[in-house]
Length: 150
Image 1 (spheres, rainbow, N blue to C red):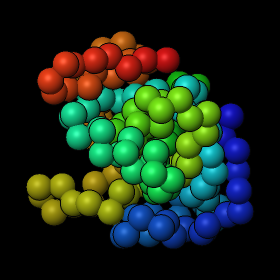
Image 2 (cartoon, one colour):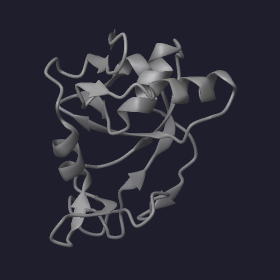
Image 3 (tube, rainbow, N blue to C red):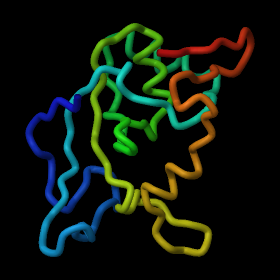
């Protein structure tokens, strides 16, 4: 259910340092980083919890500010977020649309591993993958903990 809007870039991402080479899936074929919007309920969390500073994002959205698109990837037929706090804020406020940027697990995310090699989206997703409920719910830590779900 990714609603696409005009293409942002071919082989270059708005994320600093990310996706600097062609896709390995098809020689000579470029993979696009698509920017669009989705229903937050269609996106799974990758983490089991977020910090209580979620309220800052919610306040920002309630004031009419727009957050940057959340990065989403598709795996096993499901959309997953790498930006769980922003996803939780949109869901918590009952929004029916969230700006998204589709990323691919095989591409670099602009960060470095401890050994100096570039980190891939797949490595970031694995590091963040702490959910035990398939990403349907997320625990908001802090005073008066609460559970946010689909």
